[in-house]
Image 1 (cartoon, rainbow, N blue to C red):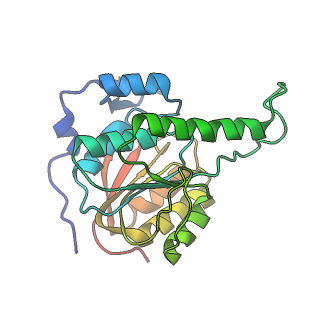
Image 2: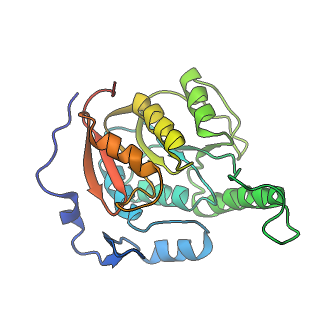
Length: 251
């Protein structure tokens, strides 16, 4: 199966929405509405609001009902937003995601406080569960407490796992969209992409967080490599990069 690129820019469909600028001056289209504003007041998270357009475009153009995968969950803001856009567009795709809630350099206490990072980790995980139960109660995701390499290995095995909500989802099969927002170092981001590529069906999408031009994160090196692959096309950068897979797997 090969997907033919459309001639009209996806941004044309969003002309009525306001244009904002990042702190570094890069412009993006912002789809924030009343619901999203209220959600972001209550649900902690590090959201680039340009991702809203990418979520919306990918979900309204999903090639099938195959699952959506999210790498990295933190307090659940992006998970709740994905669930919101799925509901908005009447899509039945289930979300599966993974996070160990362990952070690089997070040993000992939080700065010069007496609060240990282990307690912070538990608090963030509990906050995630509470946020999802509040804002996405109709379709709880399959959230697995794993690093992404372990998650993809379990997916390859078709493993039945216990998620953080007490569910027993069975992983496996092709996916229609992946949001990569885990470890942003080159090695980890590259592994996340190539694991995604093995599972992503033609016509499916992949979004790289913190990949805007000029971003200091090493994930940008991975984005440059994906740009050169013949079976992917840039759908939009707003300012992060959304790609669509146009044919079979990369070599």
